[in-house]
Length: 194
Ligand SMILES: Cc1cc2nc3c(=O)[nH]c(=O)nc-3n(C[C@H](O)[C@H](O)[C@H](O)COP(=O)(O)O)c2cc1C
Image (cartoon, rainbow, N blue to C red):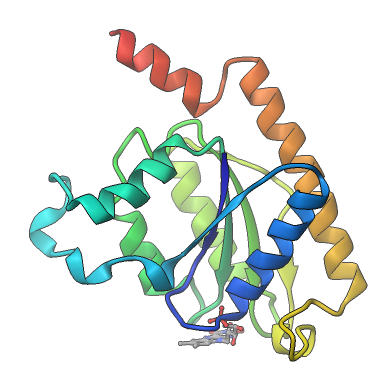
């Protein structure tokens, strides 16, 4: 299963609306993908003492989904020239190497005039550093509030076309890595044999 990660904990976020549009695109491509929205993540459970330690069960439910995902599509808004702190805080509780290594990652940015370029590039640094497979075709949504209507739908054709092309490409990317046994799933099998 692939997951779409909503990269903010803000209720009624534009990121969530874009995640839902992406989910419909995957539906159209005959693939069910699940949304993980950080507004639902139990942040109250996280404490500084827990870094690298056994996490509470309701946090582990999320971590298991990350660790078992065949691909992650991260929708990230720009907050103060980077990703939301909530997203980085969540990522800092992921396990290394299991959550990151060889995991296929796809990114969609949203924001003002730069369309979320900065948070996407910051995330590329993190996932690159942690040896994930970052899909190169990123999508940026400039002045995002102008292209989402009152029903939460994306009204700009070019953005929908780019999301569709990205989804088709990411499906092929994940399939190719899996077929060649290069993805995180196969890496975990090798790791567990040792
Ligand atoms: C705390 C905060 C900081 C923001 N900082 C930036 C910024 O640095 N650059 C930018 O282009 N937009 C910035 N914005 C605008 C958001 O990128 C834009 O409103 C986007 O829709 C927010 O995503 P969300 O609806 O998923 O929370 C900021 C918004 C918030 C809430």
